[in-house]
Image (cartoon, rainbow, N blue to C red; front, top):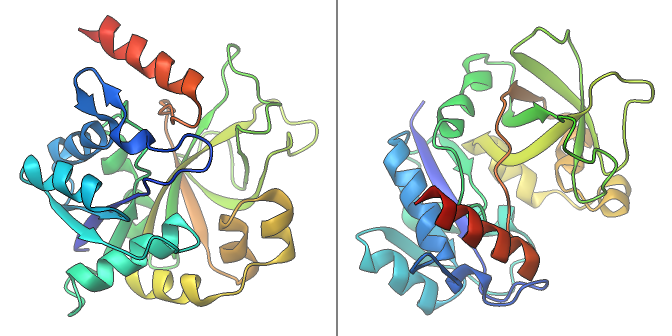
Length: 245
């Protein structure tokens, strides 16, 4: 595998506009995500963004950034556009999609994400972690993944994703972590597919891949990186950063 990490970054966020440039501990939020990915040394890192302001931040710290169409419908589409602009000859055969709103990302996750792709039968790799007692598994913003296999298996097949608590009667629910590693040809196929009824009902685009027959396996990890979707999330991340110092 020859992987490339791509961070889709959109300045015009619907729920928290401008969050990519929000100050967190003296740095823009997107810079934290880029630096964590780069320090993991798992693969080269590219930021696919929709604005020159974000590109300037990344280039200012020695990183690579490409501008993509601001009107692209999803992060996956932005990742694919960035890959084609940066690597038109197809040198990178594996694309790791890391969300640009995870400034507390554990670098070890970027090592785990490639493990499911060791199997040639797997098209897309992702991550999942069991909910602990302090987390509300019923919260719709916490996406659940239904996994095949046995609880002791370190890598398990993803069968379904939902904002509801599924499967019924489970002793352990698994929190889906929205980091993906695609085989490049699969990402190319995925972004060309029409969104499905299930996808729009759950508002989860990974269901489109499952409906299309793509196999997705999840590596089980313990850490769930916090994403920044609201002003409250941003305040919490700032507090965590301050405590970390």
